[in-house]
Length: 413
Image (cartoon, rainbow, N blue to C red):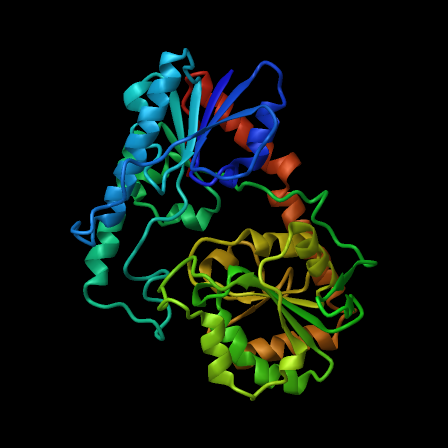
């Protein structure tokens, strides 16, 4: 079989399925992407580059749409070269967000196109108007509506769609939901698992273990969308109430989602300036972005793990923390509630309440023995619903096979 994958940041969400398909000797896997250093054995990488950036005079409502069109055009031209060399895919799979999949069926109309639909934007009721500290301007509402042009073009172009969670699927217009299957990329629970003997060494040489009060917070970047400002503002009271606690942050100083800051500023620097000397900074550790094995070690020594998010795309890190057996304290927001049952496999708090956050963290730290059952149920949730090799990958391969054979998948309800 011939498989074509498209994602500007190879391999993106497709690492595991691409590895599986490429390992089969009769398969040919081609992956279109922007330039990067990532490699997977037996996967043919084809790099594409848009002809130009969006024009400076382009209306700001449609700047992202123009970028998507340029991406789609560049992908189509790269595919035309593949076609002339005799490569015709049996199925095409790609992330819809950046426009890369928009025109694939113009070249190969008989090949099924499975598109990844991650998030449909709403000016009201989800992430955009969630945090009163960062209100929208009147001009933002039409811009957000126009932003969905890429989503709508992609929904029309795709044979079928995939979303990682039910809540994310539910954000798409009702008339399209029946052609979007909910399949998460999966968590490798054979790798991400508890280890009572684990330890973690800080840069200064101090060694952290599970018998200490280690509070962890992980995000790709430390920003309001993932509740970084709430966690920081909880620090003075948290460290006062827990004199033995160490708080470890993992994440960069860029902005993945939401409002950008002026050059040279970060949300971390802003929050540190706001707090001043109002907390014991010697017990707060900012590690930046760390290698994956070290990240797993940190989860394994965590006494309490904090995950906060706007109503937005759910992070892999929350599922991984549960798979590692962390005692999870998370925001009571819709994407989290799909997975976390308060008091059963985690504890939920009001996103904006630092007092609730401190109280529930203290509850976890005061009763480590009682929390073990909650940790066990957290891992069980991931093993049963999100295990890579036993649940998610088989479901995804079944969906692909259905599309390759020309059949229509069962409509998602």
